[in-house]
Image (tube, rainbow, N blue to C red; front, side):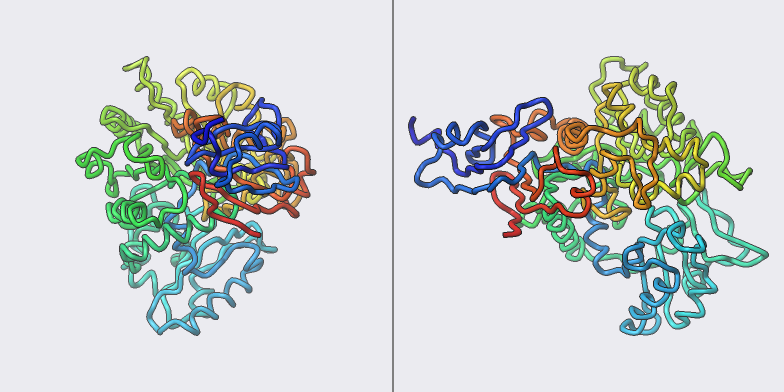
Length: 541
């Protein structure tokens, strides 16, 4: 055997899952940035030369690097500067207020105190923070506290005043300003949040590059080697495209990114990107332009997802419809014609129906088109909607972390009949719809173990089983996190499996994700090593 076919890197002595349906291997060999071979220890030993770096897996579990098919990488990186309002850090409203006051104590008066991650359904009393509560606790700072879902923000009176919002301010299109008994509650939903976001300090280009690097390094610690950034342009328009360019050119882009361009009316970056030739598929294996995202509704937990039937206890609330049919259809037609795949946000069944109708028009006009139009989240469907998606070639892009984090809230706001059937991933898998998964970080932590646990058990953090018929086998769950994520980005030929010629992106876990008890995966497993492009980029040892 000549030296040309020797491996640069070998992992041996473990359990290597190379992809759905393949036999388990003991070892895998890498040449350059590609998989060379997998097989028994003896098979791969023959590919080992004097210059080969050899890693002893010592029985550990190796698999293709995870692909978080929907998260917000820049926001995940920027989150490090905000108060952590998640249930783990602030389990009660009192704990949230204390954390905000602690940040205010080290922040100059008049400067913003910002938090992200609260979920009022996790509080003992189930109540949202209010402007009055924030006013009393932080009288000297404008305050904004964004819900975990990102669709609702609560602010104090100082922030409302800076934004020019008073009791007579009309609700913006696709947005809602909270009012009760003739007073503002501080709650801003959907597009109304922009009234405050627009006056908050915008991170600089350098800070956005820092966030890309910080967010990406965070993902590598979990074995995530690829992600979709689900709304590039949301924070500072084309500056974010430039930040990604600089990050890639300077070696500060830690993970592969499929970049979703924000296409919402008024904040779209699609036109300037198109003028530069940045259409779906252009770029490199590290940074590639993905689809265009348009929001059609809000979130279920925030009671703003657009539903066909009202929310429990709110007979007049069907959620928020962001765009009329004619406007959405025009956007989808135009962006598809410009060369973009569509990856629109739709959670409620009414929003999903609207998106399917938009995508069906595209299919009817060009039956042979090769775009894999996606519905991001795709929370609430029925058999008829699924069959229409299947016929039109539409992919569901759900986040099973939502089941673990928010499942109980869905049952509360929608009732058991609808709530328990949220995000039906096994149904989509049985239909051959190739459902992917992800975290929507910073909505949920990018930690993959709650997501895997939810796919294998359909259990919430409280132990509620969210419709057992939607449980996936461990191998199906791993396929959703790898191959299906790659397929949803049109990249299944280059990543998502550890087969010869495919990109050498590998995650090594302390426990066997195919045979371990789901509870052991959730609480006792860690990512020991991450390999990207044939290089070890995270090593816990």
